[in-house]
Image (tube, rainbow, N blue to C red):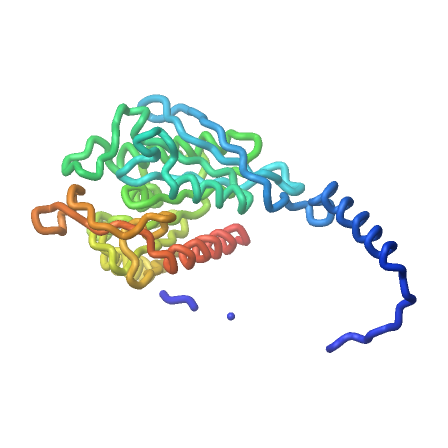
Length: 313
């Protein structure tokens, strides 16, 4: 599905000495600096979200992650929240810092007024990046789906979170996890537990849900995919969305022309990675990864539009 946006009267004013004008302007400027949010209730543009390392109980042990909180909360005591699921490369760089994509997205969500929780599914299990491995020790529809629901329960228990407005979003391996999270009878989903409001999957692999018999969504799903992706091709996701739409399910796939895998990461020039496992490539190795700036900016706007629609429901 493709989406594509009397003169006033002039009155005479008495002359005011120039020095008086300057003093008046100075008074106004000082008052605005002293009270930057008095009129709107919004955080000043220079305010940054608060970040903290957190941990909570998972299905098979303690999980860890990073939470980003809105710098200012208007009048509402509780904020919407979102669970963020990393790809096969993990949450952190080799130096132990959040990757640019994860930090930027978490900060963005906090700026939008969300409590954003980045979930580390690898570190607590003693695992590093999995992108080069054919046989992987944890899987999107098993352990990582359990992690997503454990993160949901953690957020729902927080006093600063509106438990009726918790979302989930993932990239690549985490995006494939999202396709498992949204299905009926997903592991970790409790009959009496909290529920995700809606889900977003960036460039997931869609072959598994496409092949699965009786695959059904429990919540609205947005899939955002690069049309030039040669690691997790978009075609199965387009086919999956069409199939589910015919069944009346709330799903949409947005394709971004010329964009490859990882197109939404900031400042990551397109390159070929010869080492990654790719069952669709010759010798099952290699894929292109990198930023496509026009697609990145459009995808951010599309994500925001989807969230606004769901929050209005």
